[in-house]
Length: 332
Image 1 (tube, rainbow, N blue to C red):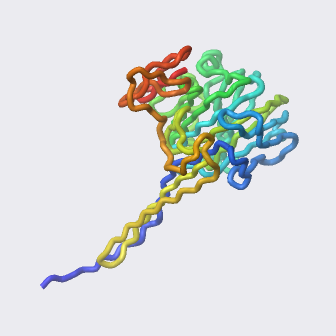
Image 2: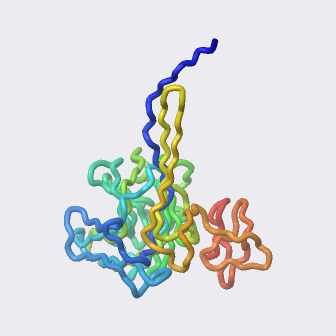
């Protein structure tokens, strides 16, 4: 005689796996999904949909930033992954950075405390990170640290990417190339991260906002387009269907004698693709590649090398294939 034993277990809470949020603004600016953000005060800054200039298509988001802290204004989203955060955005600045401290991306960071932010901006004419709680900069603003970063070219579209890891890692790319001075954390050999490494805080951004904040009198106009927020690197070519949010929710509930596993996928599309009439497909976390490298050339920004890459390995003139890491090289 067999004895059947009922096994009881606590129901497990749903686990949310974040895939990607992206927007090309071709269907306009959804202010409910991408609201403005101006903590403390707002005097003189403005966010608007610009239908006259774009990285691709015809629309972008324009930010006119005023001088002084209260001239700040941002727009963005709180739909960010709970783990590693990767952001890719094409941006254009009307003016180059000066020596003054400014911010063009700000992220509320509960790891630092209430109403504190992890910032990306400029000072001493170069790109830098700034941690609000102790005003640390990455890189150190020594002559050597400044040389390890890069200026943000003005007047044309730039592909800007960064990674904030759960282990405190910071990585940054400009037009597909690593910015050595804007790296920190595990595995980093950046000698100009002294200020940054003096704290054990591991950033945990709860939102990402794009715009302008000046701590002096500097003003600027920025345009933002083809934004991707993901849990893995997308690159300057990748990004899936613009305007798509993809999340996967899985939950497991235990019942007597039986374990039932349920998995659902929710796909929410807010805008349409810039150059496609086909139906929405799932997003892709990696840059697109071609199936053969024989007799083909890759355009500017395209991948041209890396481990297991089998696409075009020759760049169209006048571009050359630049090494980014073992897994990714790009035509620049």
